[in-house]
Figure 1: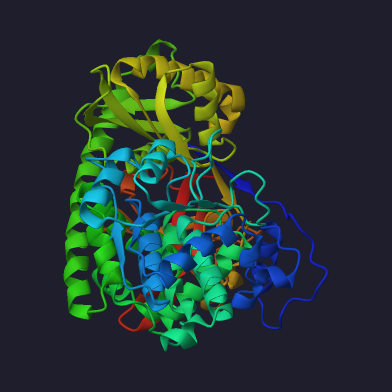
Figure 2: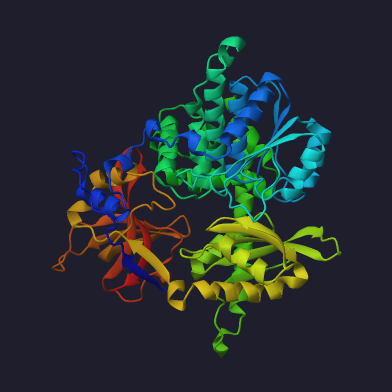
Length: 588
């Protein structure tokens, strides 16, 4: 599908001088990301928002303080994605460092129990761990029944989460969630791992006040040692990288690059063939995160958490290799499902004047429920519209109907969780449950109600998006001169982030002539491109690569092309050269 290249307009005007040596192109990029002050580029821990701004954190600390003083049995209940896994690892590691001696974790198997703190998971917790304090990480804000079951069993319950709450909050002893009503925390974009990290910072401060570390004969731990996990979970969960999150990610990356990552992250880098000293945020999101996520998608996320908690390099590497194998299996399953989805779309009667729904729902009873989230994301990227992919849960509702679970992915300008909320309000009893945030959400309903939901979802999406907003758009930071296609600028761009959701990696566009092209790795195009200056004269050629692109994907004409690309550093046999990563090509 053709895309439109739109150049970003500056969002801010800086009233300060840039640091000496900062490339003017990078200065323009920051202005296009609404950076108004050099302070917004600071990445020191001293610039983090204070934990005192989080509502409920004092009550949370009181619960944890009592648990430590009485050495209660503490159980961390996690989620089965990378954010949930890193959140769980941070909670367990921090509590042990702070002096807790009875800390365990439990993560629901998505194929048996579904998402969150359910009454069934509470039963498992009681039978296996007999916890006195139950702490959720990256889940729990919607667990009304699960919290009630835990409280009825005599447990204290602390909810730490970042997902948007529903109309009713669970009756927990304490809730820490920057998105709960009346919370004044300035950043609403903390991942689950960021929330629990803040709780642990607050707990350490209180323990210092109490003289706990002197009483226990232990040193107050440096919790910054957990920031590699915080960075991984934050990037992998694709939350907005506002200033506060950029600090957390930058500090975690700095630890990894300096050789201070935990054994589990070192092992994940090894199987992903990433060099620690050169790691960037994109590597966390596209290399390490998927391998960790594969455990929850295909098997059991307890395997991923065990990898992150291991302090033995050999054991961590063994687990990382298992995760790598699971990720290969996940990719194979995903490829099959994606082809099935595209085949089903091709079968629609579009030739008769029909059009694709604005809000697209896809379902196959044989699809793997652990992979539907990735499938939805892939189809969304291809068709430029919100997509929900469904799979059977293997369970029936109370009335015996077959249940299906959906994973939703949205496009800019459409808050997917709010859309689901509107559908649930206008169609009572249609949705069994739902939750999520702006760009991703989950839901479940009866299989028999699928078609009804499809119509309601499409109608609601049409209320918010126009046909023009469903075009594929590549946002560009403008054209680079031939002299700017340099290793120096590529290096500054690489270190100028961390880039990610809400603070996108720079993309440029310009006119080029293809001088050479060849296939590498079966499905990628290696190109040699000559940039055209304003007078139409060719400059020195530059290497480029277009991933998942074949010769037939190139424009049919042999004339100049318009190319959207990222400027990157290619490392090969010890040599570092500038390289373009092609995002989109069209004929001029």
